[in-house]
Length: 468
Image 1 (cartoon, rainbow, N blue to C red):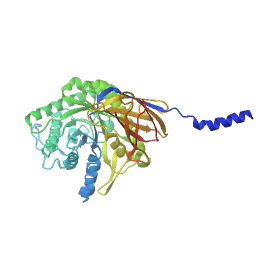
Image 2: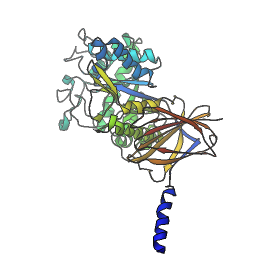
Image 3: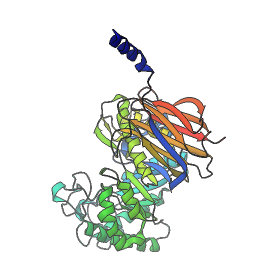
Image 4: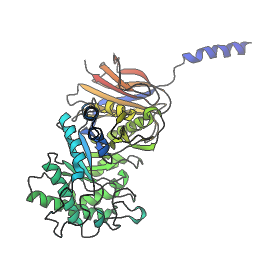
């Protein structure tokens, strides 16, 4: 009988026991690199982006541009340089361009999108990426990377490739959209079948040096066309970039590299910490990332949280600028793009869009990344499920933004611990979840450096603290 009474008492007492919270500790006085901006791409589906207007839906087209460039606070627009402008060599002199009339008509979509972006954000900067030289310049005579054949640029055609790039830069500049940043390749470390070309470390260093020298020569001869800042190495793997390719590029032509940029599809270990060290004083950009697995979650909420996982890791490990892969794709069960658009008729804002918009909204270039540590039940490892967090302090030190995501299928009780001077700050908050899109939550205040909350599974929470 006594045992039964004790068991009954324990049963009723159990709900009163509070589970250990996951602790997010932020030290605003310990700051790291400068936050320099966010971006997104208009890449494989540029014609989709402009298709509403070309289908006579002008009002819907303008609403789409507002959703992309007015409602989401970004700083960079990434564009794709296609290979179509020169199906055969224009002439034998790479310093004299003789492209066919209309060769760069395919740029009309990029020009329209860029103009729409700058109309809404005059400070938007354009970053162009060259995916592959024309087929006649390639060893596999095809725009694709060639898979196992590893198609690459033919020896001696570096000036011809430079000529092609300069013609694109000239076309964009003369149509009012000069390119500010340029990468001469896209994932050249991966022998894939999409448009691209493969480069060994040695060949990469050689091609980059020769093409950079060509562009520098043309910029001196044609001062009306701005010379873009070069972003390299732009590999698939940040680990390989840090350990092999970037050191070789810096040795061969370091003076030409203005920005160290790379994709985030090889998520081994402290990848960005390694690349941050290899980059030295140069800005470090994450130039492409998405969740490209199948996702059947409502509104792609799972993919939205994965983006926050990648963003928190990148900024906590030293990245200055982070770019989502693509603004728009046709509808699909994958997380490659923020918006899904049915050609010329309608579009849908996914949870990835709402989460990305929420992340970007309170951040301004010039903020500093603050030391943020997660411990407790949902403190997942690198690229693993769990609670993810990153923090940013304003230049005047009066405001603090903390981004938190539950990248797991369970709710998490959180205790946010704030160091001085935010121990008694006011707090505004917003949340995106399976049922909410950037929902404004009630304001609250920090008490003795503590704030507690519950983060629903797969939800993203933004806290903005303001000193009293």
